[in-house]
Image (cartoon, rainbow, N blue to C red; front, side, top):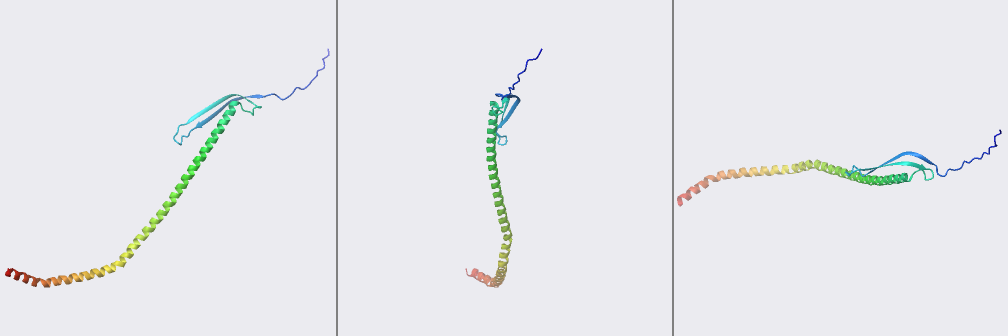
Length: 166
């Protein structure tokens, strides 16, 4: 028996939509911030299924998760930018206040250094004059005491004479 002739023709062509089974895909999102004192919400999405080469490698659920992640990242990026701006303004304010504090401390040191010198110069300027005036006063005081002592006997005689005439 003879084998019939085999007509061999290749039938390889492009597959209409090759799908590959994939494992579970888990996506976790966090909304809110514990640093700001708010509550924290965690959203977990687990997807099972297959991906298709024709659809870009993602199932409709995967595309939804990717867009959710992208949106979350954009929101977090904006929030980080806002927080960065706030931090920059706080740093600028702190630097301004530190500079102002340094200026006030320098002014205070200057005034403290001048305070003692000004009072010493005023004291030396008037101390000599005060000593001269005090010496004059003491001389006049001594003169008045001596005059009072010299006037004491005539006053007593006058008072006794007045008593006798009354």
